Image (cartoon, rainbow, N blue to C red; front, side, top):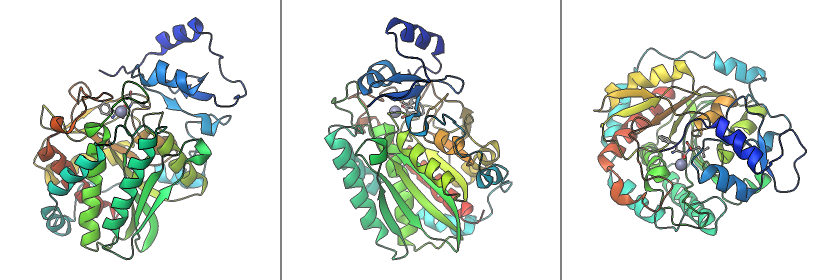
Length: 371
Ligand code: BES
Ligand code: ZN
């Protein structure tokens, strides 16, 4: 079970090991970690970040890259992001006749085969060798799939400026407008130690292959959206949302018009057989729209829950000022109990459930291409 809010405990930890309180100038290699919006942050070494936060499953965000700005609302001060926050969304889906034939060709066999390869790396930890090689395998796989449509570009996004070698992947289906809709999932995994076995079949190979199958279907169909569609696979979510923060903060700095972001993290384990739409650190308007898609594009009921501070990459989009939404497999308490361990294996995955998330993703991509 992940722990949602441990600020008082963290304060004790700080006193016990006398970690310096922020703000102090960062010395070489220290990272600034926040456990809530109000937390001023704690400077820790990479080893302390793993031991005190990651291995204890404490929700946190690594905000070193924006220090001393320290604003979670890094992009919210720009005109374009203020505008983005005010976007309204349709009251429900209107493009079923276009989406349904695409949904009909989505399947489980590619997701199953990608899963077998992706989970066979020892781990996909963002600071490990296999973290880098697994992300490169994913990039090559996505590039080959994108080759079905010459308009598509697939690029690696380097995080060397943030101090790690694992790269994110961005696949772009250009629209007639540069206004962009983002569909994202994190590609990294983490185990009980930094070098330990972490197949990450659920967290988050499942989200990775969910959006990859949706991308494959759209690429093969040469789907031509009005808004530009970007599929993102984020490096280093587990180390404090570093990959997605770098990308969304850079988009905000560049004034990119991002109309909507849908993040999926864990899509393959659902004892209640539901699609869960989480309601914290998201745009309520976009989330309400996503809720209308679930009964139309999937055969499952929709439920809602909350996940807490820094739970996944939607929080990076939200804090950069972009309308974000977050869809996952079940309630927080009933989601996969195997994550962040060697037990997060393929045998725990329900590919029928993953297929429902794929159908929702394709439905969303088609609908949002007209936002
Ligand atoms: N996949 C989890 C988030 C999650 C948990 C989604 C339960 C749905 C149900 C994510 O990869 C994760 O581990 N998040 C961390 C925070 C992160 C910043 C280290 C968490 O929630 O502890
Ligand atoms: Zn995780």
